[in-house]
Length: 337
Ligand code: DAH
Image (cartoon, rainbow, N blue to C red; front, side):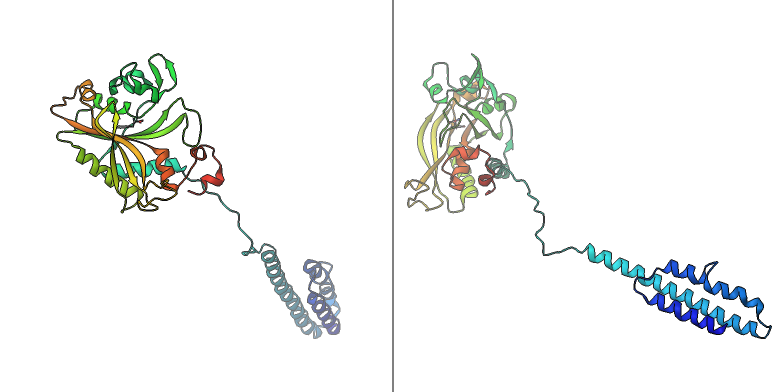
C-alpha cells in the first residue's frame, strides 16, 4: 500500500510539472471523493492495527504534498496570466501620439487685446458703442452736417434715412461725453462699416480703435507723448512717430500720424514702400463744436482724440499685404500667429 501511495505521489508530481496542467482536474483525480488517494484511504480498514498508523502517516504526507504542489502551481499560473496580460497591453511609447490641436485667437483679436492692454496701462478704460448708429452720432455731432463732403469718403449702409451702420468708432466719443463729465480717458474698439468694394486694402467691414481724453489743460503734447508710448510698446523701443497736418471735421488741429518703419528703421524698404514711414492713425484736438454739443465748455476743457484701423496695425506688425487674408479663415494662414 505504501508503494501505491508513492506511485500516486510521483504520478501527481509529473502531471503538475506540465506547464499547462489542469489543476482542478488533477485535484479531483487524486483528492476528490472518487480520487485515487481517497480510494487508498478507504481501503485502510483492511490493514492490521500496526500497519494502519504507518500507512496513515504516509497517506497524509502524500495528500499534503499534492495539496501544496497544487497551491504553488495556482500561484504560478496566476502570475503567468498577469504577465501575459501586461505584455499584451504594453504601450509602445515610441508610437506617435494623438495630436491635440489647441485653438488660438485670431490675429485681429490678438492685436486688439494687445492695444487695449497698452492703453489700459496708461489709465484708459474700454467702452463700447452700437454698430447700428444714428446719423446724429456718426456724423452730425462730430461736426459733419448733412451734405458735408466728408460724408462722401465714409459712405456706409443705411437702415433708414437717419439710422446707419457706423462708418467709424468716433460716435462713441460723443456717446461717452454725453454720459460722463471730464476727466475722460477712454478707448473704444469695434467693428465699422463702409460701402467699399473688397480688395487688398478695403473691406465693407473692418475694425477701428478710437481714443478720447478730455480734461483741463490737455494739449497736443499730451497726444504726442501718449501716441509715442503706444507706438514704442506696439512696434519696438526704437520706433519714432511723425505728425503730418491733415483735416478731420471733429478735430482742430488734426494730424495723420506715421510710425518709422520697424524693419528698416526709416531708411526705406519693401515693407514701408521705400517711405521709411507707415501711416497708422488719424488724430487731433477735439473740435470746440463737438465739446459744446456734449455740454462740455471748450473754454474750461480741452481734449484729444485718435482713431486707428486695427487691420492696418495687424498688417503693419506682421507684414501682411492683403487684408482679405484676415477674413478668409484659412487655417494655414491663421495658424501662423
Ligand atoms: N474716424 C476717423 C476715420 O475713420 C479716424 C479719426 C481721426 C478718429 C481723427 C479720431 C480723430 O478720433 O481724432 O477716418
